[in-house]
Amino acid sequence: MVTGVLYGDAVDYKVRLDRAVTGARQAGIDALLITPGADLRYLIGYDAVPLERLTCLVLGVDSAPLLLVPELERLAAEASHATTAGITVQTWSETDDPFSIIAAQLGNVQQLALDDRMWAVKALAFQRAFPTCTFAPAGTVINRLRMHKSPDEVAALRDAGAAIDTVHARVPSLLAPGRTERDVAADIGELILESGHVRVDFIIVASGPNAASPHHEVSDRRIEVGDVIVVDIGGTMPSGYRSDCTRTYSVGRPDTQFLEWYEVLQAAQAAGVAAVQPGVTCESLDAVPRQTLATAGIADLFIHRTGHGIGLETHEEPYLVSGNELRVEPGMTFSVEPGFYAEGRFGARIEDIVVCTDDGVEALNTRPHELIEVN
Ligand code: ZN
Ligand code: ZN
Ligand code: ZN
Image 1 (cartoon, rainbow, N blue to C red):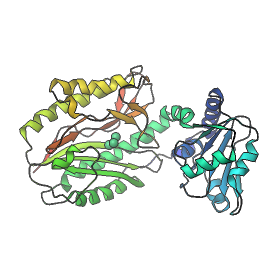
Image 2 (spheres, rainbow, N blue to C red):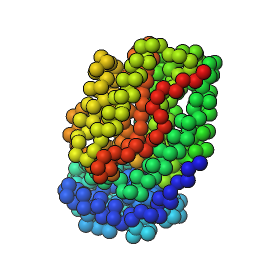
Image 3 (tube, helix red, strand yellow):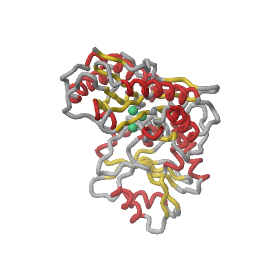
């Protein structure tokens, strides 16, 4: 059992808000409009559920920050860190038009940035409420902030990593011939919650030929002797930070070709992790495991990017992908997850979350990488 750090109370949300407003000003944006989701939680610690009524943090570069919420959500909003961060909580009632309330509040603005995950109906309503404005995604300002994790955020992700590792430690006991992927996933779901997560985000149990599909979830396929099984699982901790870890198992002895390639994959993943240090580009980190896989002629069986950032969302910046020239900096957290996928036969993936440190790298998942054979 891993306990979540008391994350929210330790955060200086005022600093985050200041940085967001400064970033907006530098980008020529007059206001950021942030709706429920990871950005809102990041900026003011408000874990609101996205619903049809508008909840919106209005961060104007020339006006005081405002959180506009439906009347019935006022108490929940005030219980967040919005008020301690110095934000006025204003309510709208059922017959008001919240979009025109915000338009009146902001007055004469030209350039607005909308939350990357804002529902289209709300984005379109904002376009109608500000007919002369141009719009940009708020991620151009906020993703950069979220990408750099503070030591507290890294600690929260370390907790998440330790929690999911305890689940992987028990996966071998769940695998047996005759059990379906769905049976195994149901047990894993319970273990994810027992391990300290408050939510199960995803469970991939990909057995036999299903392992050749990287985002296969689960099916009613029964595990057979000789199967390879890719298990990729993750959840959300009380802090809001997430886990994501893949290990590959087998029931009985798998194909000899598979075993040969799996050894190469292990070397490829280790090389990918070892290459992480401040200053290297995301695309160079994407390339490292590919080069190792190429020595065995299986680089073309690795059909996805090497990794993705992780934090309050499972997939966020930075992305380790060809073409991304962004340089890695201390405090960035991301997955290193090469795999190989042979259609109709088998597949494998090894995934750890890592953090770039001042002089190298720390892995936040520490389970062994060897193929774990269950007999
Ligand atoms: Zn994925
Ligand atoms: Zn991942
Ligand atoms: Zn994963």
